[in-house]
Amino acid sequence: MELQDLTEGYQERVDLEMHRLAWHAANLMNVHLKKKVTVKKLLGKERNMAMEERERQFTRLMEARKG
Image (tube, rainbow, N blue to C red):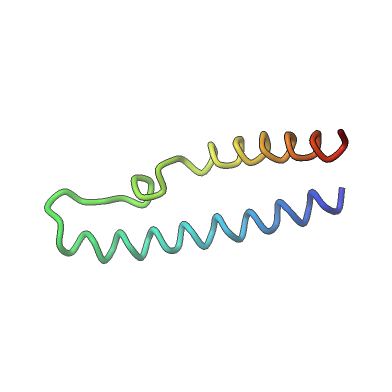
């Protein structure tokens, strides 16, 4: 249980940092582009999908650890 909490906290910090970086990059890029770039386009996926994928990966890793 504690390992899962630590893993989720770490992933949440990484996700926030990536969102922050994408926001910064979008602001820099939009100055020079005709077609505007969004944070979602730069990240390539919705944040909800990232949560679902993270849960699937965590489950797979925990099962591999048990076996």
